[in-house]
Length: 89
Image (tube, rainbow, N blue to C red; front, side, top):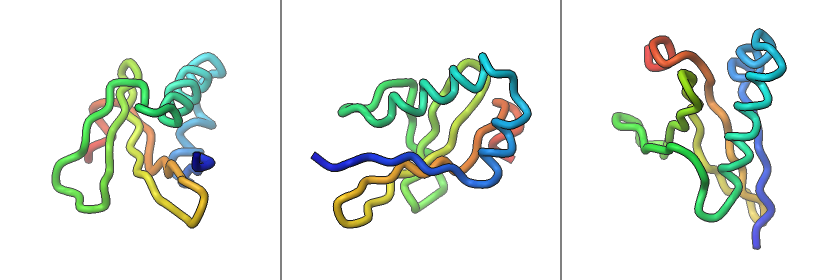
């Protein structure tokens, strides 16, 4: 069983820093659900990207992430987090 780590981009951390604690908790719980096999949540593969990006829906927020593999560690890299209307721009 591979170890799974979660990494965040600067943009994702910046968005989280502006939210209240309850919202941050909801988003972090949803991201933690990605470490399960199979992943838990409303997940869809994003069209138009060839790096394997997926999006996770948490209420009105969208979390864009991708899986990366480094030797024995699997990494969930959170590319961006944002509101439904703004995230895809």
